Length: 360
Image 1 (tube, rainbow, N blue to C red):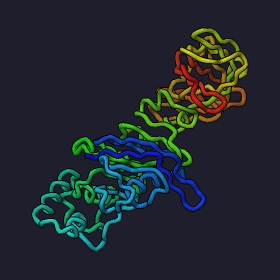
Image 2: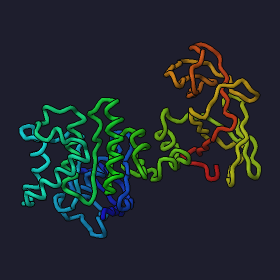
Image 3: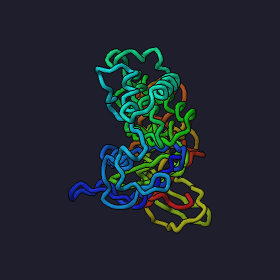
Image 4: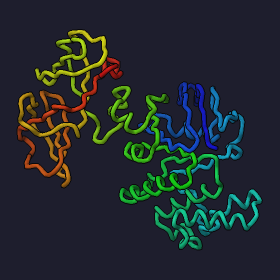
């Protein structure tokens, strides 16, 4: 079992409140990712679950048992850190065995667990090498293997890929996802990289300033962000935000003006919007196309990123920045005038508090 429940968890360092009123239920076998900008409290939250930090208030339960006063060693969790934290003078085999030997586990069982973990992580050829003889990716696999051999209630991973180069991050990320599929244990993973969060998680916990902004599946957060912060944080490149004003409000629709006069008819199931209300209109770059059709937006191109399979166009719309990601290779250059079409694009409406407008 690996069910973890947090109720009204708070953590302060002196007068500084780092975690504020955290309520979260992680189900057995889930892969949950904590994501957010630096300083949002995601690593502190992981450390409080691990028992490395003592909560200031609230309750932490693991499989129905309150563990606020249980030591980290007795919580049945295994942690993988950003630094590999391997013993440099020991072989890979010795690193994997060290914690088990300290718990007086029989040698035969230790050997069986090491063999199983090494096979699972494909590090069998490296068991007699020392960490200094391994690549960064191989060392990270050894660090994960050291957690696997403990057969913990849950795995806690604190930015485990941040020391790897871009190509290795992608391959190791795939290895972690495959590992979870094989062992089925609860995993909690901390990262500042929303692409890692989107590709790994069953559910994502988006944090800001010590609070949880939204919890949901990757596509829930992408398609229906609860507020402007989540909308801007989830998705790469981040969502465009344009100033809008309601000029007509009828049952089932509102008409907005954006970009210095462009009118948008937006279906909305239920709302309390009135003529004159100021809103923020969110449009994802991938939902913008190049098309000079009626109603398209005339923009000034500022920067073009030709990536081969797609082209990223940075443009200016009456003083507001607008970014489009279009498929293929386009003959367009900085200084050109272009026409962006948002016909049929999903639009996201946010009020003056940054909250998603209900029904939009």
